[in-house]
Length: 215
Image (cartoon, rainbow, N blue to C red):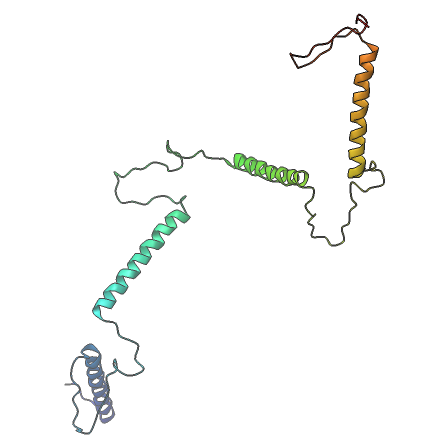
């Protein structure tokens, strides 16, 4: 047999002892359910998993529910990605599977191309502007809103070149004068053209000839 010197034998013995210790501690980790064996009756210990600072342990039911929730969240993420990126190709393991394009189906809404969408957007903007300016003309009494505090303006009706405005009393007097002038014109025509027939809406009205009267 191979002969070991004193130093080699001592080193070999130390290596064998360390291997025995490693095997012993490996057994602790491999079988943590085994009871702890000790020769000191005064020794005590605490459970690693039941200590005060240990993370909360979940039951089998909680673990199963947690796994189910995570699985559902994963499915929700998957389907959310379908809606977020509809342009991605559909991946399937069924060679007989087929489908149709959602956007080009017969019952699909009318699809706008890039140019049509841009033109539509421009039309909507112009309509919004027209509505805005129509509001200015429909409600001129509304105050002008601006973000520039240095802006100023003049009143359209009070400008130097504006036509003279008449008061309510002047407007009423003017209407009365025009009405009287119209009546004067009407009666002047009666004297200017006496040969014209008299027009009346009363079927019972009658009269006599001024020139052929008895007196």
